[in-house]
Length: 354
Image 1 (cartoon, one colour):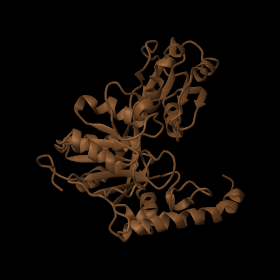
Image 2: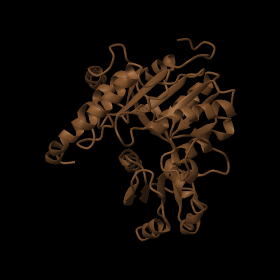
Image 3: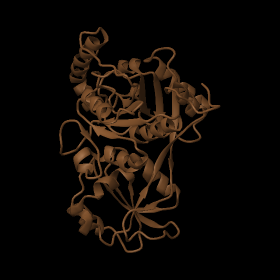
Image 4: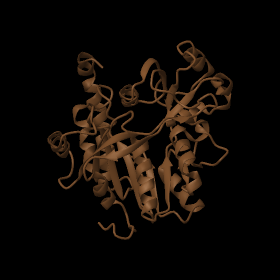
């Protein structure tokens, strides 16, 4: 968005921010109720619209909680799904019925007995999970920072290194869902998608600017992405040869880090079919992709996009295309993993301590 347009839109941003500030105040003083539950809720959210890395951080939390001996569950809104209301994900579901991110969670954790549910009203989703799975000891909320009708035990706020919330404005002049002051509800802030070798001095400067909006004792941590080896997604995806020409297919908010990773790995991206976040791929999209692809070139995509590419209507269009997914995981800088782990509810593994 140009600076001139952003300036023109600022009065609308102030009005929107004021409405949200009143709503938050009503929750803060107790005039609007937030429901607490017998099990702790851990919320992973952000102030900004778009991808700040919530999915890999949810995955990190679930894996860590399981290591601690918990029986976690995951609750999401299920953005982009064709169903409504509270719903437990099951083997008969798909990205179309529960949303791409919840379906990714189900595929990754279903065999490990981690329930996944979706609900626009998170309160109803928590009740559904606890009724269907009374063994649950903790619920991880995916993207519920502004959903104040439930009361998290731990509010984890994510903000991107390249576009931190303190340099942004509220919609429509910027991309913030609420004013920067909303960071005061955070119990921990994680700066995501950082360079792996981010200097300590640069971390300290960013942490200082973030803390002007947070409570004084809130930790500010830093995380980076770790990409795994490409995984074959279609039958035509065989063993990869040495890096060379390749095609990239994405429908996520921020594909830049993945493209940069592939470039550093030696791949020359001949064509990037970049679609909006949560894009529902169509046969025409894959037909257009073929026009830019040559036999022998791998086609890379994300694990999240792969959940939507599994749609039965796309299988004929995918025939003969060598698609590979690139796994992504979170790696904390410095002592960040230990600091975040110390904030999680026990029990802890023997010898870990707080």
